[in-house]
Amino acid sequence: MEEKKKVIVKSKFDNKINNIQNELKGMRNRLNGYGRRLELFEAHTEKGFLEKNKEKEIVLLLSTGKEEKGILDDIDKYRIAINKNGKNYFYYKHAVIGYYLS
Figure 1 (cartoon, rainbow, N blue to C red):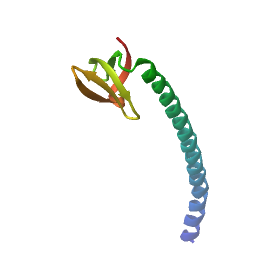
Figure 2: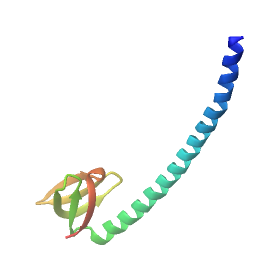
Figure 3: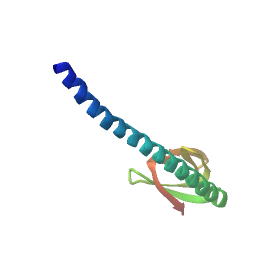
């Protein structure tokens, strides 16, 4: 008799768990869609910034609070390249809070 109760209790929770899992799957899909649109927007705006300002002096604002000045060389998916004193320096985007023309 105890086994029947366990099965009944399990089936009540199964529906709730399935509903929660389906809702999470839908949320992941929406989030992935937003992430892709944001990635396309960032790529578009960064490409424009690079085209307008390549070989101009910019300032990078780093997450450490430090500022780095240099000549803008390139921007790719993961990093920003600047040239300082004839040397290329690469900064990962996750470490850069922002950047602007100097």
